[in-house]
Image (cartoon, rainbow, N blue to C red; front, side, top):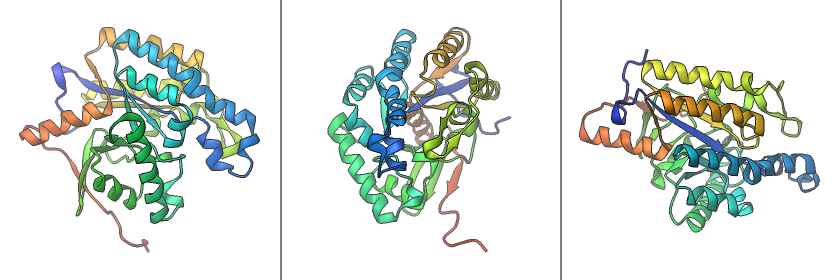
Length: 294
């Protein structure tokens, strides 16, 4: 049960967004900066995402008429401009995902600002506008992150997990919407096998690995809620896994009352309802804490 369901456009029972974090080989370079340049296996595993996975995903979206969201570290955008161009030409959204997938909780506020604003400038240069949304690498946003998002006029974040449906975060500096992710719909636990960065998951078959995401969708659909996949092209964009997703998408698009939209569109819809006074959004007030808890 969802106590405060959001009314979705055209009578849809559920809003859905498949989001892809196109990290590519930024993951190995931030994890092993001294010798990453010569670690060919993880480099190629990451490169698969923007060079093979993204074109495959975009073709499915084109065929089914879907417009969705991608998050890319700015370093990755510069390294793979063809992927950026293809995503934008197809009408999809690219959100901010750090500079080189740096963890905001592992660096100082000053370092976070430098990386954030460096990445923001690259986004503007390559896309022609500021991104509307942000997802923290590893979901690790802190209060400095939220402050930066509000300062730079972001509409939404997609890193924090305080609800099943979009909600609003408010601070003394302003507010923005949260498009909440959830590990149950993340493809990292079932598919990531990446010793170099400390992940050695027992890799599941395509159907078993995606089953959790699809069950999360069924619950959201039944409750009239919000479902979001948090996936990676070098994982779920692989041939057999994407075949499972593609067939699932075909069934859902044909048979269910679902609104597939980018997170930017979903945030804009929610903001319109709030400003019209037709929906009362749930609010989380930040910061939760200002000092260590004893």
